[in-house]
Image 1 (cartoon, rainbow, N blue to C red):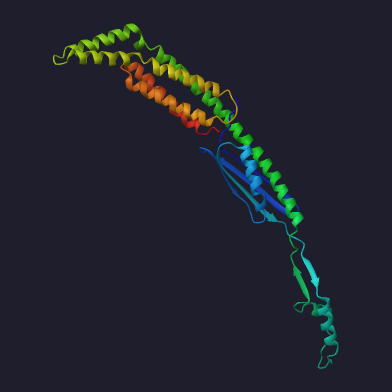
Image 2 (image 1 turned 90 degrees about the horizontal axis):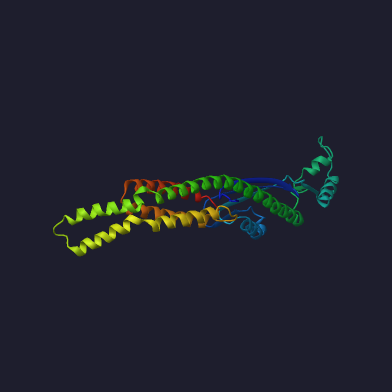
Length: 294
């Protein structure tokens, strides 16, 4: 049995080509697959590939995948405008020094605006492409961790669902073997009810015949129990399979609930009604847990 949950979380971080990046991926329940991707500026080019990889790894659930990127502190570029520096030096060389003036120093000239320029190193396209590839590799790692977590939760859920389906099978057999469904019990109940109906003076024979048919139909309840057994068997087979089966399990859980409701509505015996109500409770709990299966 290999089931997967739809809830999970994973975080993977790394660094490449002067960039530090981190992926955070979380998934929650949903009817289908809903991918919500957030990428920083400069990494839009990997969006299509990232979506394709997410869709390949996941079948159901709302998945939030966020990539955060920080560029490591780049070594600044220092540029000295030598032409301007020479022009300043030549211009000052012809200035007569008097009244205690000193010759211009190099540090003084370098402090003149425009002589020295300090600027960040331009972003390198090759390094950006390398960082993008590294981020995609990190996405694969994060996806593997997310799938592993969903699988771990799925195995636990599978055990719970198997226990519940066994309980449902026990209740179905109990309903099928209920003493109220024995032919002699049905015959006695039908005779008692007909006797009461026959005591009404104004009840004509046709109406009495129709009531008898309705009572006989209610007394059996074999169709609902047969369908319950069929659905329970189908669910047990599904739980032994791998892959996304959550939608089929949810559909069968709805069918189980419909049959249990019909069984309770048409039951004319307290013991059978009690079993039907217990079936409804177990089915509802089963269906709640199925909502988390991929």
